[in-house]
Length: 101
Image (cartoon, rainbow, N blue to C red):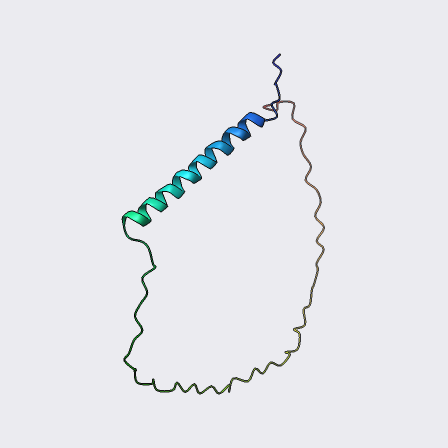
């Protein structure tokens, strides 16, 4: 008979925490390196445009709600349930001594 030893998992959770922290640090270092190597900085200021663009034509939205929701309650259909009781005599089973089981 084998007995299971219950482990509270403190070392397992510590191990997983350390692995997760290392993974996060490696990911952060990779993002930082790729940003600096490939010029991902967005500190470049765009020069103010001196050209004035022509004002756009106004947008006219013509909304007319002509959909009137009309709903009338239809009369409930009449349901007629007719039950018919048919009594049949039960079949008489023959008592065979030679049953296969």
